[in-house]
Length: 226
Image (cartoon, rainbow, N blue to C red; front, side, top):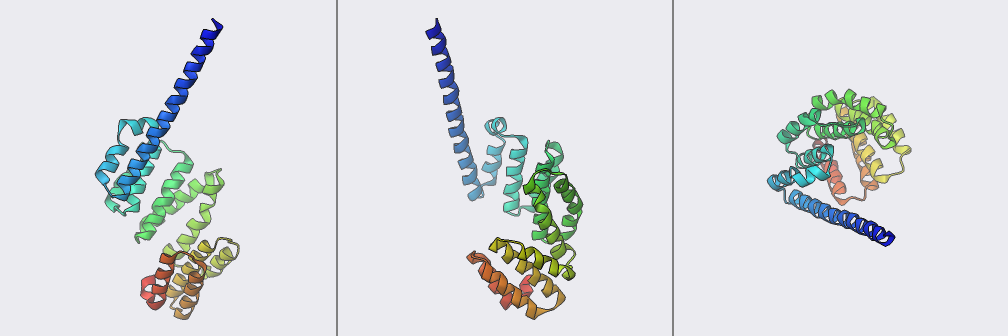
């Protein structure tokens, strides 16, 4: 009898283990399909797969919502972005998940120069960040405020503050971004000599070739900073 019980336990363990491996293999295969559809910009198939019973069973509503929103954001499909963003009220989210969504939308609005919409999200986003207990979420506050200074307020009186942030930063790519933002503020101020100085600092700090090329183009034509 004891042997039979042992055999039953073994069978159950094998079945559970096999089920886990099978599920993991299927999930990885499905995610690869999603990635493939995204790279091909095959929106119809991407959304169809997101709405499949299998993904709805294996992923939370927020995860599926985030994947769909990210797809539209990455391809700057603004109408679809707005439609998906409005659906957030139907998704149960934690405050950290809300902060993630609001931050992505805040930076998107700035990127596409819809500054009023970015400003409308600023206080909501900051409230989410400040109520979070996650240090990674809390770290977003400095970036949110710096983006507001440069793109919303266009406040050149804060250049010294950005320089202090750069000095305390250890990441060269982030330093490059900071120098670029200072150049942008000097451009708004009309101090074109300073613009070139800070653009060169930004070029010197980045190792990303596409960033170097963009910054070099801005040095040649400051209108690209508008």
